[in-house]
Image 1 (cartoon, one colour):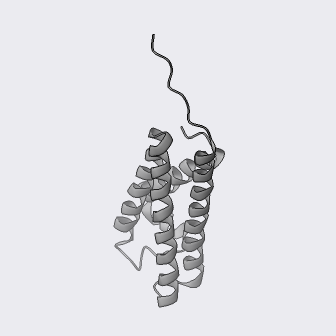
Image 2 (tube, one colour):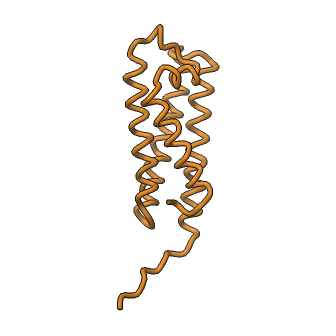
Length: 133
């Protein structure tokens, strides 16, 4: 498990959002102000997003050192792309103002948490491997 509090929070956030998007895509969509009735493709897209977030969370849990830093960087890149997509969707009218703010704000928050976790990873000294007998 990641050592820093920000990385642990990020894992929890990714797994919670990812699993809820996969298991209950219509409910997760409604939490972000999306209308599943008007968009029958929403469960499919929510599950794609959910699988990605679970994979990003699992990557953080299962990695350490430089590999964990790469997982954090990939997550930040995904979150920034999500924020840009949220802004574009709001600007072009694909999402209403509240939904656009919710998805964009969540993505920016996750990106900030990822950057904080990355900084904590870079600041912590590497863990020495146990000596062999």
